[in-house]
Image (tube, rainbow, N blue to C red; front, side, top):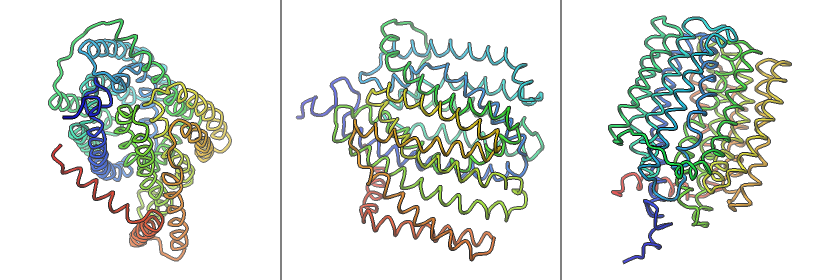
Length: 497
């Protein structure tokens, strides 16, 4: 019989190191599948929305969403993340104290939104539908807060499969309602009804899968322990919000709703690979890395392989989007309004190339408790974003803003250098090989595109050719281990544990 200390990373943890590895791999595979399904649904919805909604509607939605996203990070102060990162199993007092603080903060923020609505309406030219949408998003914040503790319980146990169903259900309901109402001419109101329905469905689904009786408690000891990680973590998260959503609010004043709509379109398209692949992996690896804090060699291998997995899929996808997007907007007449977004897509993709590699590293630093380092990195990125993006937007409009984002992305090299001091992951195996394969693929496709007519068939030829070229390039550099890794992933899915 194994000793407890051999079976677990720590006697107080809920699951063993072997289960951490196994559930992490299975979680990545299932969440990737989930994300793929959701993105297919979302893409189909977007195809209709791009035709039935204009730049102004997308711009107003982006601005209003940025307002809520900017305020939402005051509703948590990092307590949920602290519960996930905590080595010991959370007590009932930990959960209920966190829930109490969250509800107090959420109610405060909703009050702030209501009070500031006249200011927002004047600042960003919001009509009545825009104001109602702002209220709906504020209400969705309350519904989201109700899901926090059940989500924490599932994430600590790495039971990500149980998180898949509510998220799929939410997005199906949201997109179906949004598309139907948009096609019927509801305009901005389409977003309002869809947001409310999504929030209600999500709460019902997650409490069904992870029952938890909401309650209130107040423990100074709990708050003191969680604040040590939670507040620095949330400051970092707030800086990220200040950097992204805060800058959207500034760009709303510089570019107007239509300009923000074009930039939002470019960001949505270029961010698809990150949503498909990176977001899934980082969701799984934060709690997994937290459980591996004392297993250095396991942590090193996991970091290298997780970054490789992200870059392997994200890099060629970004290259493919940049090459195929000009053809798409020309073969579909209703998409001609998005031609001004083609150049911004390229520059924003450059930013996301760096994000694909470094987001996982900041995730790692947070998981091993180096929260101050990510805090300093976020200060750097926030300062650079606010220095470059508004200035270039004033000078060169939407294209200038996108150039600013690409310049900020290049500074992520610093994060790679710092993270490597703590965990000696392989830059060559994790980043350089997928980058080389993607560059080779992109060069060949650009040459092919020059000789192909602008048509859907040409897009299909380029997509298939790109896939073949990239696979051949990667197998030549990595070997057949890629196929073995795929087999292991599928085997993990169907294992009984």
